[in-house]
Image 1: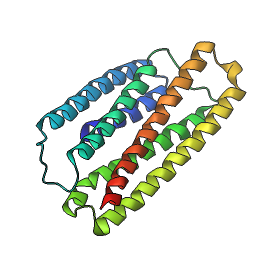
Image 2: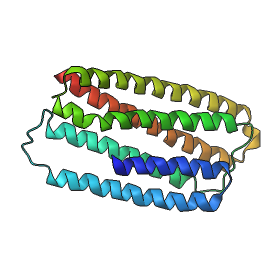
Image 3: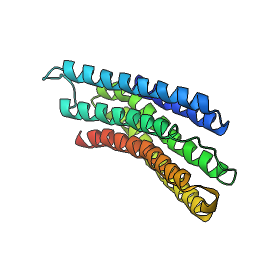
Length: 205
């Protein structure tokens, strides 16, 4: 998860650079995110290749691999967003600035919550997914779902505003922003899937 978290942290930096219209920094950070994503992918494969067939753990090998795969999907989402931001020199229109900042913020906050759940994963293993630790994680999963819903609402507001002001965009800008928003939403969607996957493990106990 550490490699994935680094991808998301750099995504925060790239959004800051975009707000400052610093295209050189946007391009530089995008390359860094790609390298970090490749590192996260390599880490996932390394773990997959060295997992014993018979784990003495309260979860199956398949479940553990699925959790690793979802974490890697978040790194992929980060790379997709970063690359899209470099395809064309983009400026955040003042009329959308508040909505875009709120939208990015909500999606990043969704990841921040699921990151805490992953950090609690070792404690879950030690308690065999039961007890107070399990109840704590169940509550955190609900918080992730709520934040994902808030991300969804912020996207609706953003898109409504954007379509109401489409005359301020070239066709290329408009389409590219739509792709960026779609990939940014994928970040919180994947985070929610990861949280629910861990929640499902609790239900099995």
